[in-house]
Image (cartoon, rainbow, N blue to C red):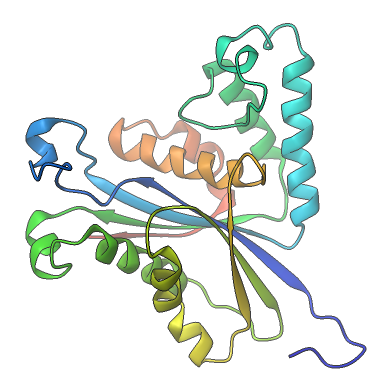
Length: 231
């Protein structure tokens, strides 16, 4: 509750995931045999007090890229009127340019939780439900950070799947019980360009784990806070 005449500061958190929590395809076949299996499920959040500044930096990057003849002929940009920055789909040259922008950013910090997927734990602990694994990843993410009581926290979350709000409420239950004031908003990268920042930060972690390529993560090491790996 705000004291009359005193406006509390707001901190914004942009939350996204990389990989997926699934072990089986829609027909119930193991993804390890069918292909498309992701050995890690990663969730993370970028925090900042300056949401408008972060949004403007990304929007300006998109505008400059679309105007630049060196890049605007790239099919992924030229063929999409609503093109936005997305690490996995971006052209390598565009990707490097955006990473350079991220290196210059100030006032952001990224916390990450990595879950190494294990079929035995998935069956026994998570009851074979991807949503339960997702809930555990979120719970671990929120527990990895200390949230100040004198700040209003706004969690901006990418749309993930069914019953996501109930999962989020369960994962943040301890925050509500401890008197932390917050709200949860669902956003998309098309409407909230600043979501591209967490997308890229998670891509760097994924690249390090899967490809063994650490240079992107190392270049932005100062932008990472807590990185927790749950086995």
